[in-house]
Image 1 (cartoon, rainbow, N blue to C red):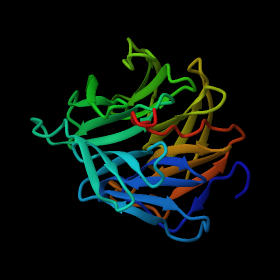
Image 2: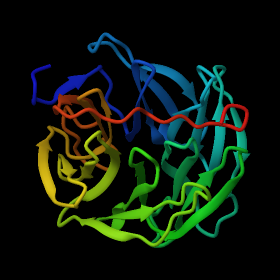
Image 3: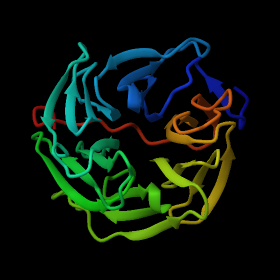
Length: 289
């Protein structure tokens, strides 16, 4: 991989590749609509390895602290735990029975070990989505509503700042988060995109925010003050998820919704960016919090 040049990783072309994370020396990601949790092998020319396959959409996962091979996941209409056998153990399904058919979308754990997951309507109905938070005791509560297509969230190093995109509206908002209650406060508008949709996000060690911009074939880096710092172009129209592993940025993309996908739509890319990321936070249940 040449420094500064995006390179294709692995053989797969994903339908809706998102939720990519650097965990324990490897990269894990999901193909949302096929319900697959995947891992990238060291051989970058090999296919991705399937870790689990659910019978419903799988939005994103986080590792569970102290339990190798265990994950907490935003999936279907709720939140579940996935063990090494790949079977889901449901904590809650808060979107069951909603007036509009719903699914979970992007999710992440914060540096204090709580898990945050967004939901959206299959038809992206305006305002139908919510943001949920899973506490250390496994209780799932709704902390924000009125969202359309929530993506992220992404957290600063101490967990007191949360970035959340509403992709359908082209906006990224920044929320203060009370470290004790785990509740978000009133947001400010961090960035408004003039084209494309902000999708997956991550914060780097300098406090800057990276976001994949769906529909534009680009990734953007914003400084902590909201100014655009740089833009990376990719040979795929719909970049969707991203993460930093050291100073290597990994970006997923999607073929879903394209009438005539190109040969690299749905691929996973890697590019060295010269700025390291923050460690991937695990979910910390009470027994290990």
